[in-house]
Image (cartoon, rainbow, N blue to C red; front, side, top):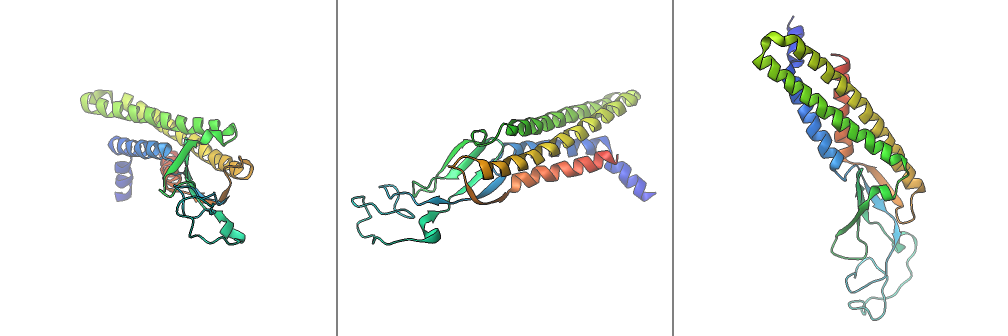
Amino acid sequence: MHMMAFVQQMRSPRLSFIQTVVSLFLGGFALLSSYWCVGKQKVPKPLCTPTKHSNCIPVPGVSNTSNIQFFWETGDDRFVFPTFHTGLFIICEENIYSDTGDEKCRGFYTLTPAMMWLSLTLELMYIGLLLISCTLLSVQLCIRTCCPSTQRWGQLLNAFAAIFTVLGGLLGMVGHMMFMQVFQTTVSMGPEDFKPHSYGYSWAFYIMLEVLQPQLWWNFHE
């Protein structure tokens, strides 16, 4: 008895609206982030310049390199390992030609196969369907407050909101899996100036994943 009351309370329109708004906020925030994947690249050390004095190959005549002794480097000593982080829209890489620690960014679509556009489209459709669901739930709350006699219309709106949420969650999951495939393809077959030495998925990827899973489970069991 108490369990049924608890479940009924958890499925209340107000709580469903709050859950959808939180999912929309977190999903939109993660979608715009450039921290879906992070890692390091392995590139040969650049030549030293007036703005680059460490982790570089000494060049005679360049300032602050006169005291550097030339020696043969082998193995990984010949390389630098700049960090990078990427999202659906942009990829930012550590600038190895400067000691200031700044980054250079470019569009991630310039590195990826055409399938990336399908993944991005699915993720945007997920956010759009979630926005529609949020709008329907807000209208249901207004109907429930202002016109209690039309409760049936509110229940109909709630049903459509659940359908849009589940559909959006499914599209988001497919888009997520496609992004994983696209990124791994880019790592193995991408351009020469993007060759990750090591990488892993970051917080924005997992936030989106954690937003999608409860949505699908809850709405399928509602």
